[in-house]
Image (cartoon, rainbow, N blue to C red; front, top):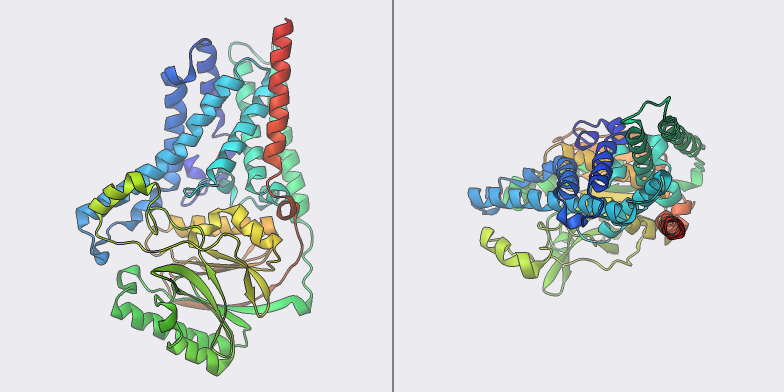
Length: 505
């Protein structure tokens, strides 16, 4: 499963990669029918190792934060921090898989095959929904399909990423149950295994046909909804970003890039997260804002906002008068980077490892980001993984997606995965997405998830493209994640029915 995401991107493996774990968990439960799940090592070790394999490989890019000597962190302390982050995030993701396996053994041990598939799918979707409400979230199994399998990703327009997750888990479950039926007998003597496998294949094909139907719908692009947007990829390495050399390079690169794009007739220019690492008061005195006054083209500038004794990671709308029209403050902060989760338990350890002080605060979750061109959906870096956060902004009238990020301190697989997240968000909300990153990948994505342009890595780049403001609302935008509650109701009814039948017999 770890090979399904960047850098390998073998997305097709996700349709079979969960099936072996399903088989092992069900067989272990049947071998020990009277044991408690927590007392059976196979029932815990198999999902733990599977979860470590998937989540550990998928988020291995987090180790790219090392070395942090440029921030004043000693080399060994930097290595310890990077390894701690990787291990912690890996085990957090693996915990979801372990809980799922325990749930299967409790609720689906003595039920029929199709009931077990339904309960297993509902449990996985419920756990992903619960995990995604917290601070640590990135590796939904749904994003294994992005940006390659655009047809299946269009199921996200129905109920968000959970619809894709449900499809993957259900198909894997049917394949696993078919194998369990096959073991010990041949399909000829036990044809139920064949029909389970046929059901899995039929569901796989049918879901792709539904997704392809959504993917094939033409996009309406009226001229009055057009918006020509420029992107600046500043390529300021993090090693110098917060020092005088980095300040000079950022000011020069973003100011000259803005002037170039403004002369090309763009309506607005987007810069990455923290493009100008200044506080708001210093930003307004910068040469970039002076250029905005001169050229009269709107700029969305990543900088730091002041919030009493703290600061926010913000995106500012600067109008032709050189004034701030609107400000969006990042809501979903990066754990262990922008703040310390479970600080009462981990704060002391982190503080001993690192001399850094964190004073960043999160923005309010109910923000809207109005611009001179209408309301936008704003996403700063890590927020791309939180589908419901962007869905809420689309439901509040957001007409296009602005994604600003700085992935400079990670390996190339991270910006590729980040692009994959934004592809999903563009499809789910039926919106054009404009991505500006510090060192790549910046890009333009249409509402069908097609990447119209993508930058190279570690280069200074400018790009201008026309997007279209949209006011459509997908089923997911209107109703949110309705599929998980529905699956839970069906699973509970199925489980109760199986228990009633067992009592009668």
